Image (tube, rainbow, N blue to C red; front, side):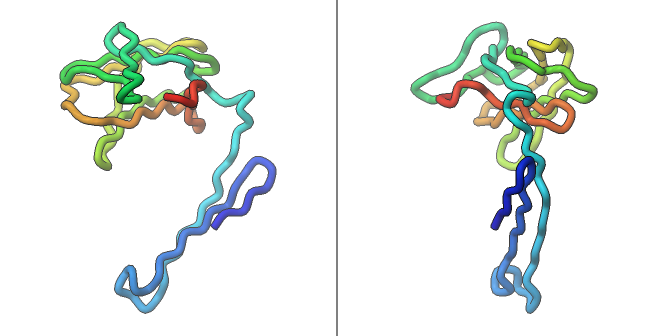
Length: 135
């Protein structure tokens, strides 16, 4: 259940007692801040090991296992803390950010195993989003 007000949303998640083997339901609540897209970090392209490796049939960026260098191109990509992570089956792998400008972020991942990963680019407290909604 969520309640939106201007620039934030309050989310409450409840678990039925039968789902957690308890007589008391579990409840968690959190407030998320919504950043207007005009001030949010955005990336328009990702290159993998120096190439545009987007596969439109698989609808994914592809790379071979091993050392992988991701370069994000976009805008508003600088901040005090910049973190690039790949998520795979519940595990987060953090890359080493080696180059950073307002329009580009470079992250390296060493000895990356083959698999399907979700890409996350966090600039301070804001996740960057990709401008192409087809990717």
